[in-house]
Amino acid sequence: EAGVAQSPRYKIIEKRQSVAFWCNPISGHATLYWYQQILGQGPKLLIQFQNNGVVDDSQLPKDRFSAERLKGVDSTLKIQPAKLEDSAVYLCASSLGSGYNSPLHFGNGTRLTVT
Amino acid sequence: RKEVEQDPGPFNVPEGATVAFNCTYSNSASQSFFWYRQDCRKEPKLLMSVYSSGNEDGRFTAQLNRASQYISLLIRDSKLSDSATYLCVVNKAAGNKLTFGGGTRVLVKP
Image (cartoon, rainbow over all chains, first blue to last red):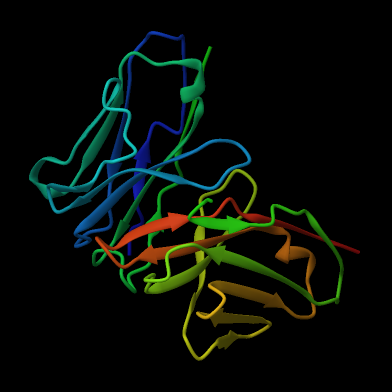
């Protein structure tokens, strides 16, 4: 079974620039998550999709972050404009169901550095 | 109070020893619980689910205490390869939203 694919693996940008991350979940997984993990902390949920609908985006800084999951498969997460505090690893995960007793499968993550 | 709290550690453990640590959660309606393992600069991976009756997987034992709202993880006969950060994950009843704790770092030393 192919895992969750993410790209790019690393990205370095200057503050106020924009950046986009891509995620392809495990085939057949209806739920897709984007997490932000700052060094030394646990992952923080940014947005959760069920198929192509948003289930939870309460912690997404909507003034600068946006995400979409067209056709209920691939997803992109965008930051525009980036701030220094956005430096983190952005993890995409997918699960077969909607979380309850349905564990997450993570991609390798995208390590973002904002200078 | 954070929704899910963990002692960040590090727990320095001699090889072969036993180590245990807890994770507390604030929402009494939480339904499901997991332990994930995260190696340095890697993605989290599921270690085990935590069932009401407690469960064991080899050297790892997970327990759930609903009355006191915490889960625990015990590692017996620690190996050097057990060195990692252990993340507690709690599923809130409403909306099936998974919340991670900050992680407990374990360092197993020869």
